[in-house]
Image (cartoon, rainbow, N blue to C red; front, side):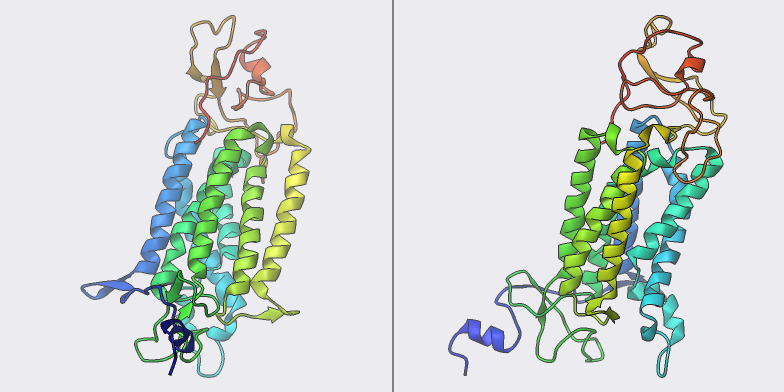
Length: 370
């Protein structure tokens, strides 16, 4: 017999204190089942869209722009996230005794961020290209909001009792129960019920990353344009995902002694780092258009305009008539159609034509994104 309560807890795989797992993971409404996993993801999306909309408006963008883009970004993001999961864990859905139809059961969990972000970004790019908006500015507005959405969405794993880490007796361990049918969940060990709450680790990491990116965006606004703030988000997430992935015990494909997601983190981190350096050498070439084509180009003025004829006191925002893709690089500094938004007092590349030869540029009265 164990001589102490602590030894007994170790023997039976239980911590003296642990985070209890929820008894239910869905709410029945008539014939429907509303899963908490889906609600967590939905809550994360809503919060991210609202914050992105607020940041975009503070940058001079039109209200509703982010809302419109979110439709395509969310749809394509869900498709991309599910595709990555199904492809990287094909053994869970295909083969003898498996049910391929379950590949469509998103509510059971399984969305890979590595597929969700690229396809979600594609949705944003499609709308931005059609409207003539700068992907550079959009990336700056959106960057801190994505990890916040991830921080909220990760709690869906808690309700599904999935993606936990190695067994532990730490006070913040999460208690994992058997399935309703009495089977061990993926990664569970017989007789062990408390594990590292990796969902919580990633949630806290992403929350801290969101706060850090918001601060860096305000502190180094002019040098983190051109998608560089977004690249910092990607690098920051990869660092956190790398060490958290080491704790996870759910089935995964290994390659050269490491899980697939560890290798993915390394490759994506290096790609983001290379982009960060590359973009830093050509910041002046990125478009800064935050107002769509044809929307009063060159006339949307914010700030005090009483002395605009002699001293430009306002910040002017308009679309640049360009069809550039990607981050909409501006290649002709002397032929801008309208005046671009600049978060710092520097004159825009097309300001000369918009002000019709006016001399001097005043301070920027535009507000910074939060």
